[in-house]
Length: 152
Image (cartoon, rainbow, N blue to C red; front, side, top):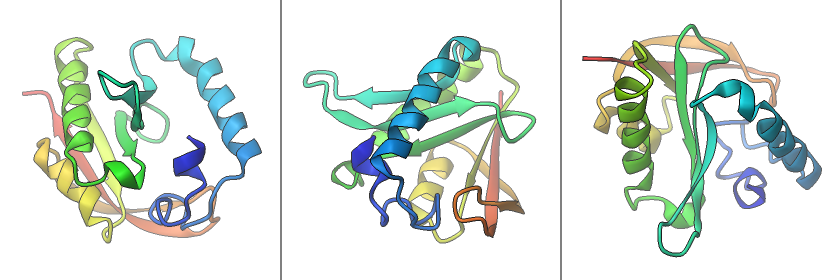
């Protein structure tokens, strides 16, 4: 988590490029661990390579901003363009619909974040509208593309 959440380039579309300090990252991780029990089979997960347990990135499926569960992901640069975001996100969507019987999943992305948008489109998410939210880290309003996918 320190590798990705302290990288300002990586956080460009999430925090406006404002990196987290090591203490903030540790506090965020402790909160995620504490909240884990209450999230059931949803939450935030670290993905690892099957054979080496190398950290691939974090992925989430949780309900906290919208009426439906939100999909999100963040990967270190060394794992960009390798298909991991698509593979894990698709597995999460499949799990959400087949096992959790969720009705719909949503996701957001800055319009300039074409790599994330491509992942969302590959897994079947459709652009719905532009929304504006206040970024809690940068304290600025940001316009985001809102995507969703519904259970077939």
